[in-house]
Length: 135
Ligand code: ZN
Image 1 (spheres, rainbow, N blue to C red):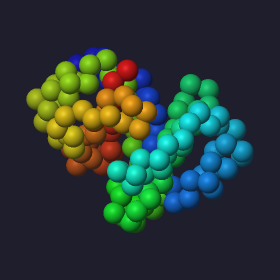
Image 2: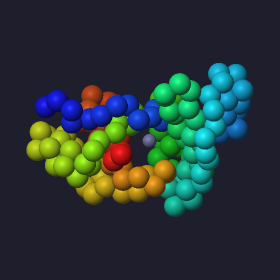
Image 3: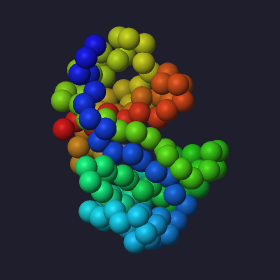
Image 4: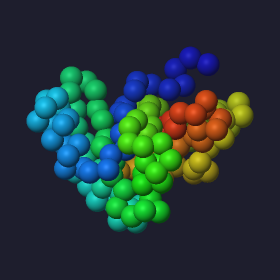
């Protein structure tokens, strides 16, 4: 069971206003902005920031139907997911499924940074949305 997941890769934070969130994390808290992306197919704007060896993604929904907008509607802004690095995402997904963890993604897909990612369903992970990202 050891070593299935690697280190915490990043924390995803749902925000209503990306510019306001960048000012807080960048100007006030001193995170470094390392990139920004619009993913219109997923109704998502994302900013990547880091401090020390911790990375965060600030996530803003572009449409009311987007996953982020729906998350904010239900729970308000705040931590949306935790992402962990894995060496071999297909192997880990297979092992998790065998152990009864429900995956949202049946197959890995390309995440915001272009790496392979997959999400576990929060109803099988005690309410926390967990993401896997292949190194
Ligand atoms: Zn993520």
